[in-house]
Length: 195
Length: 195
DNA sequence: AATAAATACATACGTTTCGTATGTAAATAG
DNA sequence: CTATTTACATACGAAACGTATGTATTTATT
Image (cartoon, rainbow over all chains, first blue to last red; front, side, top):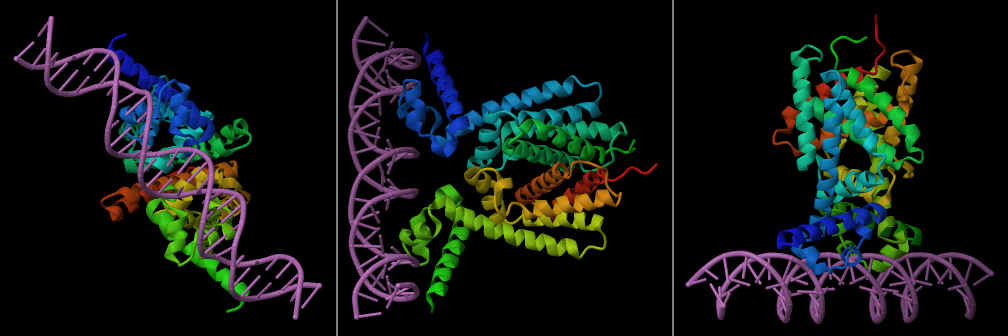
């Protein structure tokens, strides 16, 4: 195994172990020793690769968040129209909150430890995508001429809060449907002509 | 000073000091020694009164949450109609979320440390009030028969994200207007469609 | 090819901070 | 007036974080 591969391997193993541990116990309750020991390393490797504990969480969050953005993009691009894509994206985002990893790491510990999620690289991509979609929808006359950045941020916020609600619920499956229904009504408010 | 008064005084001082420290540095970065020392006490008082560090955060969160509910109630009750009250409440919520104390303590550290916000003793009286308002609006035929808890959570989420956006902005005043306009459009989606 | 330098970790250490266990003075109860 | 409870302070032990240092293995240089 070449050096670069070995380094990448170490990185992968640590992120994977951390991802599991953070999801299960929460960021604060996990020690670096536990993580490194579980993959046959020591804290030396961790501090060398990620700088500090926050750096490790950042790496884990980036990975999950990128997966989420990728999935949302895939879902949106399969939709029949721009409008359907916007909705599908929001719905997909809400549904992803059913994943315990997403709940604990991205929605709870992430914001508390790393700060405002809208400043995260992948979240920004998601927001930019929503903004561009809204711009096009206004151009084609589907949506009212509202400030698109504002609307995009509110939509993302609504979806995020729905996700948090689901994450905290005892019966996530039931809650998802209610959240999606309400989300659809609110998105509908942006539309020019109501059905 | 009587005994009961002195106890209450200790409690007040500790909560106040913790509130300031948590808001400024974040829950994890604040030590119990700092808090107690700043008001001339030791950790003994803290553990005796609040049990542990989480208990102290819980007390602080309860206090802030109660204040928020009180303020939101006052604002909503001044509105001319239920519908206007709902909107005024949303706007008030945005403004309250501009408060760094609210952002850091109630919205970030609170959920991460104390878990499911909907199971907090006081959680979100604000939310409960929004739910009741929506129930009444559906009853009077102003709003579509949507699940009110879902709608309330999405509205609050949208308002919160708007607040975070505004707080991070260089020109908050400009951004407020855009955010409120987009918020109004989205709330409008809940309204009964008129043929 | 030999040596210098950088890399990728491991190991050891000091510091901080939490929670608990114990001590104590003052207030209240009996 | 004594006994007990309360409301703290003090002392102690245990994690866990970050840093400083050590070391073997690559990579670069001449």
